[in-house]
Structures are given as structure tokens and as C-alpha cells.
Image 1: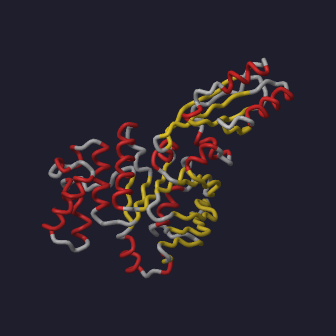
Image 2: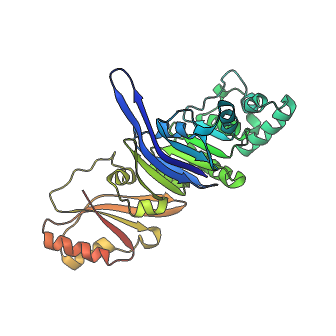
Image 3: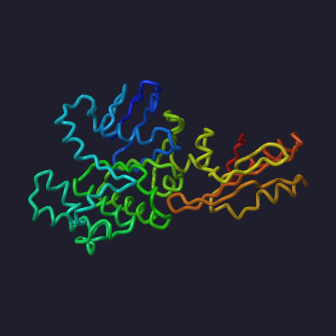
Length: 330
């Protein structure tokens, strides 16, 4: 288990002081895929570097399997880090070495002889589907293939924890899905605990069990992915779930509602029936369908009429429907 308690990290220069992390606490269970999501500047990368002590926090603690990293000597910390793998957005491969030499690198550093290292490297390349690329160089690979090599190299260290820092941000959607499927398969096959750092809600929805929302260095919300989608408590979570990069201007009207529904009830014409019931128009500002663990989840942003009495009756009508979850939003 990973236990983070009251983690604080501040960066200071002569002219500026930046609080990257502010009293962050959470726990990750063994074998779990845990997501940490936030926009650029939220403190995600600082947080993940604190998890393996590449970044030393100002206060607070990171505890792994009952051992606090701050209590370890430098030698003990180096040994502990061997069980904490990390993959990055930029792959970080040795460009002058072949694929198999990249995968062998951590094993030879750990003292394994070259023959044994190559045997194991081929095994891990089979896991990521690249055994036929063993003798080519990274420059000859696509972005998705480079990330697969990086994953194979991490597996060569037999990690217990895998930290993924925006591991799919540089990839196209189809390749992203294949890499996420690979990470999920590895999690299940080797029971490796995975921590995913990302700004993409689609990544969280695809493979994570639980997730935390980070905003301006603070952990503002934590829940299962399904419940976070159904009923986000904070504005930060709602912005990430309902992709506000596609900005919608508020029309002349009344209250805004977010309605969440599942695939099984998506055909229920709730909005149409409500309009017929009250004989008042409703504006649909946004709608989309997301996939969470292979199940379709829908959401819709609507604006009610200006008449407050009618609007309140509509909210009451919707709240009586078991097929939807309703939230009033700013």
C-alpha cells in the first residue's frame, strides 16, 4: 500500500515562491490502478516525483508497505526505488542502443549477466508485443512502440509499483487506448500497483479504479471513477469531466443542470417527456457519451426556463427519476 500523508512541497527562488503541493493525503491499495488528474500546473508531476523521493517534500510523508521513505538511508532508498518503475511522456530511451539493449540496461546495472538479461528482455518484449523489434533502434519505432519498449524496460526491474507520468499524452487516441490496455493487462498479470498521472479524463475513465482531482496543489476530491462521473462534488472535477475546452456560452435562460445517465437508461426520453409535461422549452448546451471500464456513461448540460417556479418543478421532476443523476451547476 502507498500512503501519502499531509504532503507539502514549495519551490522558492530569489523572486518567487510556488506552493506546488498543499497538504496532500491519500492512499493507494495494493494491485490498484489509481488515477491523479488535474490541469497543467496542478502539481501532478511534483506529486509523482515525491512518491519515489526524486523530489523531497518540505513536510509530510510517503509510506510504502509500512516503510516511510524519509526514514531510509540513501542506500536503502536506492534499493527501494528498484521496485518503483516509472514511465514518462517522452519515453526516455537510449537512442544509440537497440531495443533489446534498452530493456537489458536495468538488469545489467543490477548485476545480471548479459545472457540472462537478454533472455529476460525477450520475454518482456513478448509481453509488450515487440519481440520482432529487438534489434532495431528507437528512431525506427513509432511513438506507441517506443512507449512499449519503455514499459518492457520497466518490467525488467520486476517492479511492485508503476508510476505513469502523462504516459499517453504524446500519443494519438488509438495508440493511447492500446497502451492503456497493455498497462491494464500488466496490472492484472503481475499484480503491479499503478499510479496514473494525467490531465485526460478519458485515460482515468478507461482503466482507473479510483482517482483524485488535484487543483492548484490541493487534492480537492477523491472517489471511485464511476461515482466521480455520476456525482462530482467540486467545480474542478466537473470541468475535467465535462470537457470545457469546447466552451459553451450561456444562453438567455435560467438554471443550468448537469444530468448523468448510464447506457441502460440512455434511451429513456427523460428530457422530451419533461418538456411535454411542463410545455416549456429547454436548451441543451452540451452532451456526450464516455466509456468507463467498457460501459457507456452519458452526460448532458441543459438550461431551464427563466421562470423559477417552472424550473424548480422541472428539477423536482428529474430528481424523481431513478435513471438519471441531476446536479445544479454554476
